[in-house]
Length: 298
Ligand SMILES: [Fe+2]
Image 1 (cartoon, protein in one colour):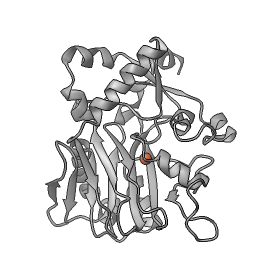
Image 2: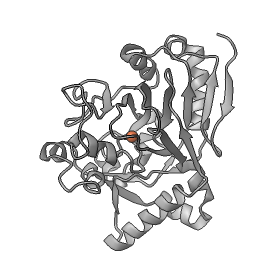
Image 3: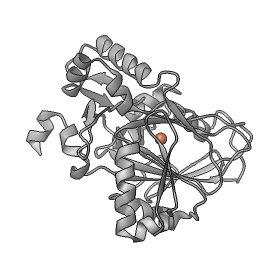
Image 4: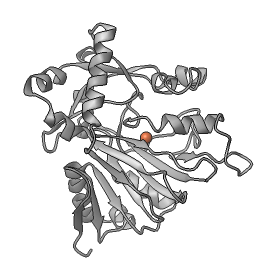
C-alpha cells in the first residue's frame, strides 16, 4: 500500500484520508490498523473517489465490527443496509407530507445513530449514490471537542450521569405519530452514560442526540434544561464540519464522539444514500456506558 495522507478538514476533528481505498482497508490488516488509528483520533473520515456498491461498503464496514441489521420501519429492514431516500415505490420523489419526507426531516435534527437501540453504534458508513444539484450536505460536530470545552466541574458531574434515549422522542419532534406502534414496541427507551470515554486515547465525549429526553434521577424540567444546554454547547456556531457530497464519496463517523444532521435540498430532487452501521462492542467501551444497575444484572 502507498503511504496514506491525512488531511484535516474540520475544527479539531474530521479528516480526509488519501491514498487508500475502502477495498484495501477491507482486505489488508495493516491498512485497516492505520485507518482505525485515524478513526480513533479524527472521529470523521472522508474517502473520495471510491468504487462503492453495497457489497464493497459492507465488506469495509465489517472490518470495524458487527454490522447492524436494519430495524423495522426503515427502508432496508432486515438487511445490513439503511436506504435514505425520498423516492417512492413508483420511482418518483414523494410529496412533503409523505412518511419518507417526514423521516428525512427527522434526520435533519442533530443526533448520533442508534443511541436508542439495545446495542448502540460504533460507526456509521455513508455513501452517496444519487446526489441533488445543491444542498443535501451532512453536517458534523465533535462531542469530544465540545466535552473538552466544558468546565471541569460540569465534566466530572456528567461522567456520572445517565440519559434516556428514545426513537419515538426524536420522531415526535417532527410529527406525533411518526414512530409507528411497531417501532415503539421494537425500540424501548435506553439509558446510557452521558460521557463516552474512548478506550484507546482516554478522551471523553458527550453522548447526546435528539433521541435523548431525560436524565436518570433528575427532575424532568431540570433534566431537559441540561440536555438543551449541552446540545446548544455541542452545536455552537463555528464548531461544525459540513460535508458536501461528490459522487464516489464514502464518509464514516464515530457515533461515540460526534453528532450529525442532514441538510435540506430542493424537495423535487432525488437523493439516494446508503448507510451501513457497525455496533459497538466491549473493546469500544460499550460496557462502561451502561448504568450500574444494568452492569450488575448482566
Ligand atoms: Fe444519522
